[in-house]
Image 1 (cartoon, helix red, strand yellow):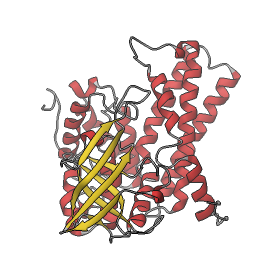
Image 2: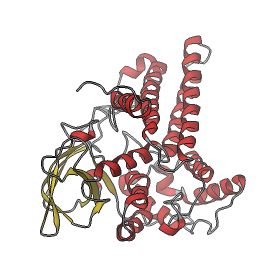
Image 3: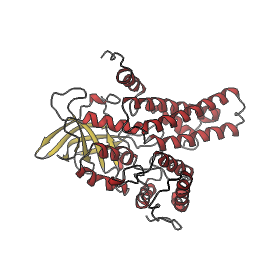
Image 4: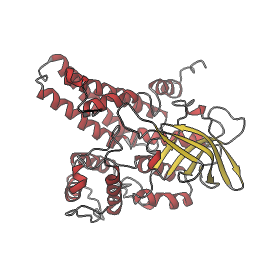
Length: 400
């Protein structure tokens, strides 16, 4: 596939305007020129619970973003990024959403693995993997959760052993989003025999296209299948594809999760703002904007949205966040679940009937069903509260 007729795929400005209004105009101009044809027809779809929609088109869009220099906007220039300020990253995220640009296909690579390699990786690892992310040609998935170790990452049982210059990996991961269309997976595995909890873990970079890996999609209640079970049976990764030192995987994994709580939430929150706007529009269309209870719920939802924004900006101002970053996941997971409930409440009884045969869902129904998982995946609310209690407030550990 090539860019649609009429698209202007020229590179983003070599120098990003420092003036916020000028930079916003640069973003608007490029997006207006390129979100056309098939890209515009996607209507901004492709986010959570909708990640399979128009996937092939979105893959091509990712390459165009890479060619134009819009991937890795906030990465340091010495690592191939644009060195954009926090304010510029926020503006880009806002304008991207306003333009109804396609949902991104490599959040795990750009916002999680890339910054982690910049912080903890070797120069050889950066040179090997950062260009593929920046060019939009290599996609990543996350190998953290397991059937017996979901939110409790320290319970990981997947094992890796160094044999003849290669890591040999055996075990199972679950909820590996988009594993079936990813080229690489960053895997937390236990590499020291007899180790327990957060000791003896390593952070490995594992190629997905090999005989030792089997991916089985998990069909969700939303109808999608971007979640997967991933089985490793003598899967291989080169000895030098360990980030940090062997046995130091817990520190690297926690650093990645802190990054997930900070910078990467900005674009997510812009999507939340669009979902909130849909709630307001529904309330107005159904004449519920004068209902005292609904007005209160809408106002509370808006307040939460602003709190998330300011907390994310605060988190981004001081380097890699610490355990206090769990505040972000705890807050937005609960907020987003409540938004899903608000949307179906606004639709009333019609929200109980599918939009079409055999199982076509409205956006509100899809959001409601998907957000049931928001307080569970990525570290459940209970786990986040324990982290904040024990590692931030210094309270006694929960009995085990």
